[in-house]
Image (cartoon, rainbow, N blue to C red):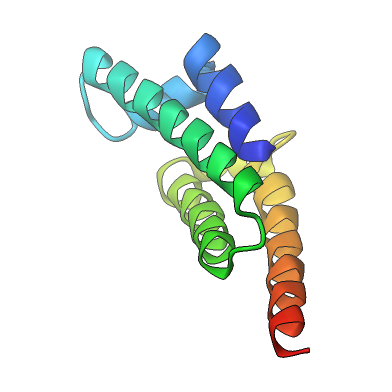
Length: 113
């Protein structure tokens, strides 16, 4: 559900100021930054739907962990000050990575059990 929320609300319905700051830090023009943000929102929405449909798939769970880790790293490199604010990537991504690791473990144990 996190992928759906973060794809729809701060990127597709209304670009949040933090989203603008993240894409602006890449050095693109405002138009390109807008397109990158909207494309990211669509990608997150699509992945969220895939994750809901295939949450028991080992590959989808691993992609989820990689995506959450990559986004956390992206913020840490480009906008490290965002790591300490309210509702930051540390407080959202790390728990979701932990839950994904539990889901991955449960999926593996069902395959072997």
